Structures are given as structure tokens and as C-alpha cells.
Amino acid sequence: MTTKIDTGTRRSGVRHGRRMLVAAAGAALTLASVTACGGGSGGGKVADGFTQAPQGGGKLTVWVDSTRLAAAQLYQKEHPAVKLDIVTYDGDANGSNYLQTKVSLFNRTGSGWPDVVFSSQNNEATWAVSAGFAAPLDKGLVDPGVLSGFAPGANTPCTVDGTVYCLRNDLSQTVLWYNAPLMKQWGYSVPTTWEQYQQLGEKVATEHPGYLVGSVGDSYAPEVYMWASKCGANQVTGAKAVTVNTTSDACTKMATLLDTLIKDGTMSKSSVFSSDFDKNDAAKVLMMPGPAWYGSAVFQGTFKTPSGQITASPMPQWEGDSSPSVGNVGGGTWLLSAHSKDLKDATDFLTWVSTSDDYQGKVSPGYPAYMPAAKTWLAQQGASGYYAGDPAPALQAAAGQAWLGWGYPQYSQEAIWAATMTPQITAGKTIASQLPAWQTAIANYAKADGYQVTTQ
Image 1 (cartoon, rainbow, N blue to C red):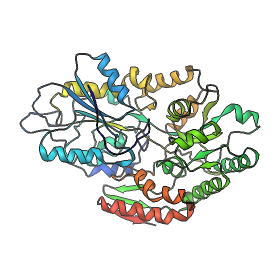
Image 2 (tube, rainbow, N blue to C red):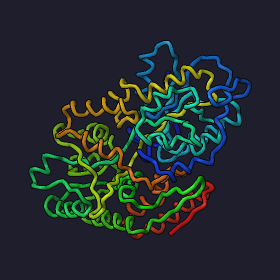
Image 3 (cartoon, rainbow, N blue to C red):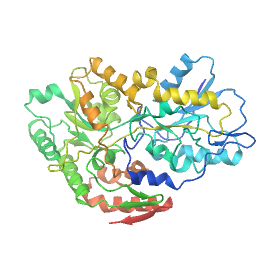
Image 4 (cartoon, rainbow, N blue to C red):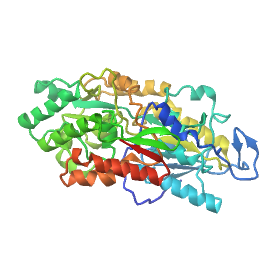
């Protein structure tokens, strides 16, 4: 059975999750003071690190977004004895907080919690543990051998006081996607620095007007560009403390670069998932920085770019910077409810959906956080015949390069950017001119969530 919750939030196909592959120690501190264990419904036994609800079996209720629907359906096909009630919702896309709102309601009424839920957000543990929703996974529910198979740092956003409360779905490290035949035909070299990237974008504006080298039209634009540039907009420094500095050199350099290319017409202001982009721009992408899932989900799936055109190279870096850095867009998480009355099947589903080769290695659009599945996934990409060259080297290199200064606070950077920056960019304002307003908005969101904010 599959049902759909209308959350009022439109979501494009793949999403995706958010934020980063490897977390900083400061990011881990975001979660460190959340001490409440995931307490199940009363009346059960204490085991596996929490008070469990009385176990009775029945249908397993699984919440997924539209992209992960295929995962739930595949599990049902492979496990016909387990009866699933599959519910689709927005996956907390763009920081909608739908899941948190519903859990708060379920906590008041004492019923309604899903057994397992996917979230596109990597920061759900910042509230899900203290709300008693997320069950601890490394106290007996999930085998230690399974947990050790995840990429280093992948489950850091899920870790509270040393306990793992969710499993990472995928890594969404950014790379530079580009059209290899066009680059060769026009005699261009793939840029390795941001300075070269800007120069090439300006050259394309003159020599091949209408072609694009990127897009800032989506709410996750700061995670592609500002994160990769080491812009300190999201530095978590304590359990409830953040430092926000959007006017540093790292921020202003990238803002100026983007403004230059927007003015030249080679940086789109449209969402890559919009009908406008699909109609006018999809066939004219020369280059586009973006996450690992862009290859199959965006170019092959959304744009319908023909095979033999697209491949990936490493993200550009600023000249003189000896420490490569990339952004991250996605990599959502799977949480198991402490209220589940069928922990055996719920844990099996959670483990399968985050580690199985059948889904993660062969079906998932994103780079799996589980390392054995990632090997299968990369082999699938290389053998697909779709790419102009094997994207695996660039993707593998970027997997360990997500900048550690971008943290996992409770508030959503994508929601802030969408509310504060996107309307101004659309209206023709420069990104550089709006950096102070972005900083103010971040500070206000952080304070509203109880953070002590330091601005610079």
C-alpha cells in the first residue's frame, strides 16, 4: 500500500538530502548536548539503549520522499512477508520541518509515528533525539560490522553524545560536470581553478552566447558554491552556538564570481528543475558544478542529455589554496522510530535500504554512504555507457573533500537562502550586495532556534 501526504511543498524529483559528507568536530558539537535518549512508548522493556514499545508486529509504516519510493517498493518486492504501509511526503525538502511538526503532534496524541522515515535533511538528529523519536542504532539494533561499513564521517550528523541515531543515505559531494565533446570542439580546457572557471565563463559569453557554465537558481546554491569556497556562513562552534560570517574574503570572492557570470548570461538564475530551464537551458549546459547525483538524476533523467556527452572533473579551487574543498548537496538520512512496535522488521528495513547493493548500489541516484555499495554504484556508472568518460575518479576524490567548516544546525540554510537571497537575485540584485542581509537572516533563524550567535 502506498499513500501520499500533501504537505503543500512542491519538490523536484531527486533530493536529495543535504549537507555534507564529512563533518567537523564543531558540527558534531551541534548535537553533543542533546542528551535525551529516544524513549519509546511506555510499558515496554529497556533494551538496546532505550525503553522500547511493546512489540506486536503488524504493518510497517515507512515514510519516504518520491525518489526513495523506489527503495520501499523494491524492499516490499524482495520481502513479501513484511507488510509495508508506504507513505510519501516531501522528505522535509527545503527545510519544511514537516516531520518535526508531525512528530510533535504524534507525541501529544500518543500515536501515529512512522516506523522508519527518510529525510532529505542531515540535521534531523538535532531535534529527533530530544523529542524521543529517534531510536539509538549502535546499542544493539544495528550490527557493528554494518555501521563500520559507512564512509568515514558519513554518520557524524547522526551521532549524539557518541550514539548513532540515524544512517546516512548517500554522499552528495560536488564535482564539475561538463560537456566533453563541446569542450573539445571549442578548444576549451576544463578549468581547475575558480579563476579559470570565471575566465572561461566570460569567454563563453562572447564566443557562444546562450550557453551556461552553472546555475544559482536552486535553494541549495550556497551548498554548491559558498560551501566549496569555504564561506563561513554555517560554522557550528558548540552545542547551541554558531559563528556566522558571510562577508569574509571566501564569501565575497565567490559572490563576485557568480555576479560576473550572471551579468554575462552564462550563470542561470533559474532552477535546474524548472520548466523554464528545461525549455531554454537544458540543452545549452557546457559546465555545471553540482552534486554526485546530477549525472544520472539531472543530466540523464531531467535534461535527457544524450549519452556520450557528460562527465565529471574535480571542483575548481582558488589559486594558491593547497587544501581542496567541495560542497555537498543532499545525502539524507534514515531514522528508526523509538515508538516502533516491530523493531525487528523496522531495523531490517533500515539496514537494507541504507546498505543493500540491490538498491544503493544499483538503483539509487546518489553516491551511497555505505562503502561496499558505493563501489557497486561507481562500477554501474562507469559501465552504463552514458558518460563521455568515467566520472568515478572525480567523485571518489571529492567524497573526502567536503569542507569541514559547514555545520549541521537545526535550521535550514536552504530555507534561508530561498527566502532571503533567491528573490533578490531574481529581481536583479547582486549576490555580493546581499551578503550582509544573508548574514542577518541566518543569525535571526539561529536565534529563533535557541542558538548563541557570533557574527563577524
